[in-house]
Length: 171
Image (tube, rainbow, N blue to C red):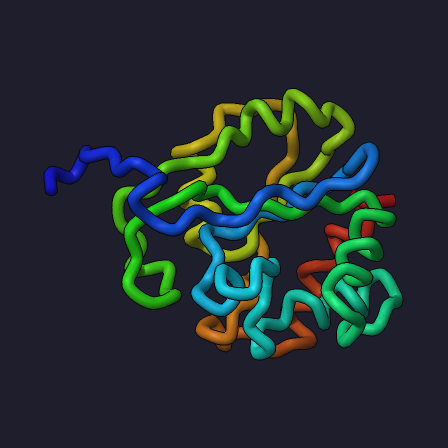
């Protein structure tokens, strides 16, 4: 395939729909769900991913709650979740293996949720693709250390400290 080839999303696995409660203030964007997340239809479904533990620490809930209750907790705190990529070719779960990404309509999502004041990018791949996918201006964005188990350069405590900006923006 040529580099600029578009793939039809009907031919490859699609990502997850956005998780959004009433009047979100923060949108957390990953790149594209890993295999475990896709199979379970759950954001950050890999038990080694530190996302839910960090959210539990920040918003004072038990990260081992059933998934629907974790979603209730973060949406109650005005946090939305989605991914930059709608579908792509990828062997395995590594972001480095993403090919031919098709992006979600992030501009439309942000237009429909004008209360969002911060877009938090979960790792460098999300940030790289976000710059390609979204033209929104006037909304603060922050690159945060990836919560993925594949990115263990920073300690849990260092990651949690950086992610505190999400709680601050959520209000």
